[in-house]
Image (cartoon, rainbow, N blue to C red; front, side):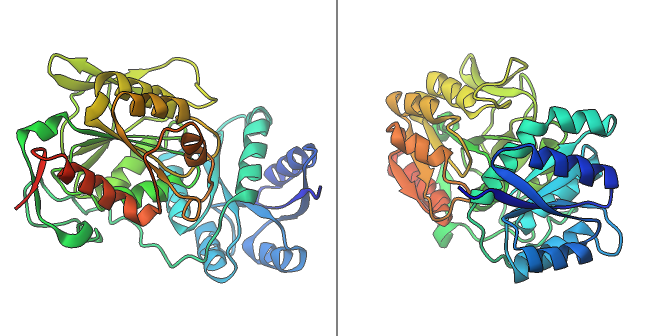
Amino acid sequence: MSKIRVVVVDDSALIRSMLSSLINSQPDMECIGAANDPYQAREMIRNLDPDVITLDVEMPRMDGLDFLEKLMRLRPMPVVMVSTLTERGAETTLRALELGAVDFVAKPRIGIATGLQEMANEIADKLRIAARARITRRAVARPAPPSATPRAAGSGTTAPGAPPLVKAVPISYSRASTEKLIAIGSSTGGTEALREVLTQLPADCPAVLCTQHMPPGFTKSFADRLNALCRMHVKEAEHGERVLPGHVYIAPGGRHMLLARSGANYVIELDDGPPVNRHKPSVDVMFRTVAKHAGANAMGVMLTGMGRDGADAMKEMRDAGAYNIGQDEATSVVYGMPREAFAVGAVHEVLPLPRIAGQLLQHLRAAGPVLSRV
């Protein structure tokens, strides 16, 4: 079996050396080159034809994002970004994911040598996943406009860059819609998949809970970027807050998000317990509480991602009466989590990504008094 061939691109000699050693210590991969800037990386990619590259953001001669944009347009290939745990680093990393990077590694701000060594298994796993990811030629993605605001519920305006509503059908909700709830789980490739689904939902849609596998320090920036593009109000979830229609709640990195009840209302609970299925936040944790407290009023969606986090709990949602959708293999960057959910009988339908939002709205309309055409 051939090894995964990796090129490391970083202007830090220490990082290049450490990543190269880490990669070469794995039995199934090898570092075939280490470049100190994008120009050197370009020649290595051309001559060595690696399976995956790691790419630093801040480098001399050419910014990592500029290089990534050119790479994904001219020679698409799996890229894992090496980012810093800062607000600016989070924004840049999210932009890299928009441009087509498969995943990212958040290197520590202090104690880099020790920190990277402790992250060895995580980095190796991300490289393995990236090497198997489905990569397509990307059009240049527009960054989220920082000053944009989402459409206010009931208004006729939309956020800049937001697509039209699915089938452009005006809709309105009865009071019963406040009981409806959409829960979405995702991992590798999920940031862009979530964006495609959420930007198609109307401002008065039932509340959406999202667990995307992401470390602390990134989910707030992720929620803010989505909020600039979506008609719904998108925010990082807070402990104890009421779950409201027209709102999207993103599980904060490093904490599990649970659905709970307070009287007649849904509320969010955040938990600092151990990782579940190696993840924190975990989709399983969220889906299980949605099954318990929302039952048949819930709709579940499993988007692209590696592993099987959420599969068993999504089956609990279906057994409790929820309607579930899984993303199909052709549009998934990594067809792991949706495949596992299908395998255990958790999903009602398997759909390509562009059709998921429309099917959610169609299911709501079919529910009768909950959603009606006007």
